[in-house]
Image (tube, rainbow, N blue to C red; front, side, top):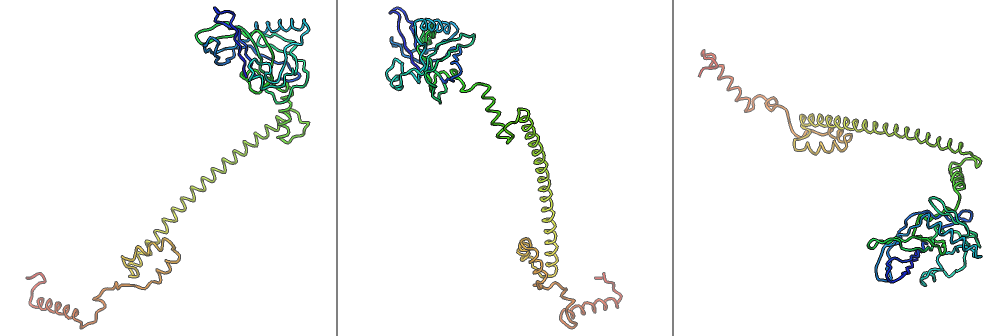
Length: 334
C-alpha cells in the first residue's frame, strides 16, 4: 500500500513535498535494512489536475537526514520511528480504516548509515506477528525534478514503518532467519531426505550425494544397454517375421501349383484357396491334400479304345500314306 502526499510550497512552485507509504518483513534479532535506490511509485493526480509518474529516491543523503532527525527526536525524549502493522497513520481515511490497531509494535531507535543501505534497529514492544514478508516505509520528501509527466521525489523524512504482505517495493524484504540458520536448516533437510544419521557432517552428505550421482550414472548406462538390446531384438524379430512370411507364401504357391496340375483346384477357385491357406495354413493345407480332382487332365486319345471313330480315322490316314509309298511317291509329293 502506498501513500502519496503533495504540499505545494506556494502558488508559483510546481514542485511539492511527497509522502509515500510503501507497504515489509522484519526479524526480531535483525535490523530493518533499507537499500538505496530509485523506486517507482506509480501515477498520481496532483492538486493542480496534472497526472504525474512518481519515482522515489532514497539515497545515503536521505538516510543521513533520517538519522539526524531520529537523534533529535530521542534527545527530546521521543521513542523513535513507530513500527505498525500496516499503515494506521495514513492520511487517507480509507487506508487508515483498514488497520484499526493503532498501537506501535516497536520503535526504530537507532540507525546505521551504510554505503549501499541504511539499517534501522527496533526496540519491540511485543514480538512481531509471524507471517509478514515485507516492510513499507511511510516516507516524505520534496519533488526535486520533473520532466514532462515524470517527477522524482527525494525521500528525506520518515513518518513510520509498516509491516505488510502487500509491498510496492519488493526489494524491501528481510529474511526470517540468519544465513547461518538457513544453511543449517537446509543441511538438516538434506540429511533427512538422504536418510542419514542426524549427526552426519557436510562431508557425509557430500559422499551420499556423490553416491546417488554415481548410481544414477550406472543405472542410466544399464538402461541404455537394455534399450539397445531391445532395439536389436525388435529388428531381428521383424526380419524373422518377413522371412517366415516369404517362406509360407512360397509353400502356398507350390501347393496351389501342384493342385492346379492335379485338377484338385480350378483356376477360378485358386484365389479362395490361397486366402484360406494364408489364414490357416495348417488346416487348409491338409484339406487341399485331401481334395478330389474336379477335372480330368489325362490325354483323351490315350484312353480311347481301338475301333472307335477317332481310331478308324487315324487308321485310314495311315493306310493312305502306305498306299502312296507303295506307288513310289514320297511324303512331300502333291
